[in-house]
Image 1 (tube, rainbow, N blue to C red):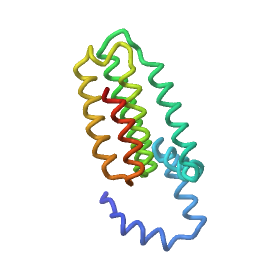
Image 2: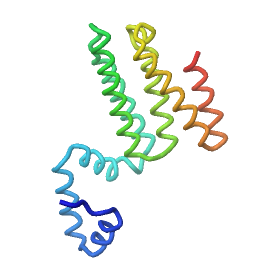
Image 3: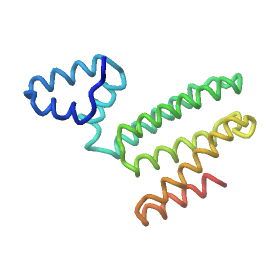
Length: 158
């Protein structure tokens, strides 16, 4: 089966009635968990971005608290899983400020992780890449926001 392009889908969706669109959205939400999460974000959380950030931060907290610290390998796998989830939540929002806020929070939690990030080279590399990515993302923001986030980034580097 050949997948239609976004423009073809857009044209087809414009021809459908409102009830058909609702039906299609419900079918999408039943098909995959990510579709349901995105639809939930768009319907309930997109209007209040600050609350969305708070909710994601609390989920990051709970995920970090659930990490099994018996082996560095398991810690690394769990950190990568958390990182994938954070990136997924960033994709839902698509706001640069939200992206920087969540990446900084993830990096702070990673840096504070016990056993220390210094024990594992993989965790150190994840943290270094996060800091490099943050520096790039911050440079693309408004000047006032850049100043605030650069201070937080400097605290993270120390």
